[in-house]
Image (cartoon, rainbow, N blue to C red; front, side, top):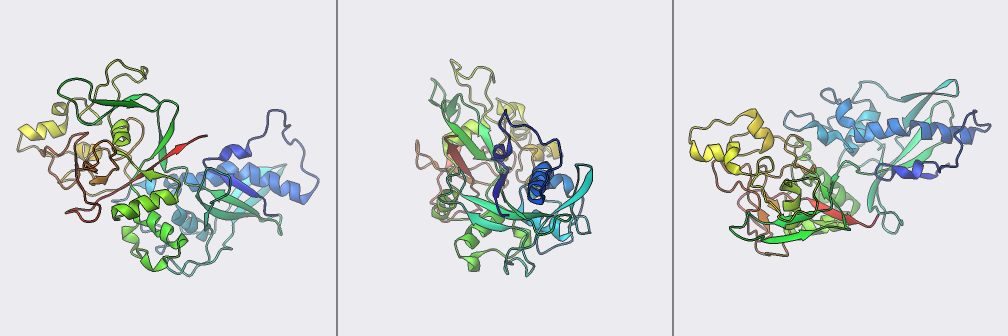
Length: 393
């Protein structure tokens, strides 16, 4: 065996054509039976990979892979290779797991195999996955995780599957958008993405993601070994940010895309509005109606947990991979949290989103469309970044 199957964002490769007849009888050979079992197990394989957050009930028993922290939201465990490794080692359930499947009147047990070389920077345990570059594959993918699946009742057979990070990004709907702060008069800069398929990273690029980039490029000595730092935003010079995004077939997020993703449209149904209204926050069009506006006029304002869910500003507890602070199209952390690097072809010097957790809620830095300059190398505070992809599919 060894046929390459794909699970994740190109799951459609598994779909049968309309004229294909479903299997009604048990296949007459073991190899065909094996393939039918693997195909039937695809939804459960996908769930383990893409919905690790639903399976993570408490501290994991494999600290070399995952360190459970209250400041890290459960979304971190979705499409997470370290969760996949921990799960199949038995570190999530406390026992050696398998996928139980009833098919053709019999019970089968599907499992992943630890057949890939250990990554000493992580642990000496053989891996249940192997990171792969997909350059020249013909697929609209550049990077994936290869795993091997077997069935206990059919020894001697195995199936290679590619898992992709289908949890990473969110689609930007096609419509007319504005760029920059609310203009004092006129329309300001407007643009549209009609006929374009744009996907924006939901979260910041993390240290763990950059670790994988470095391993795949033979730079093992540069990885960050501290597991507590893996979920945190990666702090890279601008040049390296662009190299990382390019490695994935993506680009560093641009200022106009950030505004489009964070400024909620006035009318979702009307994609060609006569006037583009720019909101000052992702939740209220007028900042004066938000907790940020209230804090500006009330020096004694006390932050609430809900405030910090919307925008992590100074005074909020540190937390990553929270999905409470999501924009209208699914991009997380549109305001507050970290300063963010943005490529700006319209105003090249304004390449840094300044609203962050390092400014108090009353600060005038908290407003959509407001940016500053970053020299791409050093800054007084950590600078996060994310990527976007434009596809032709």
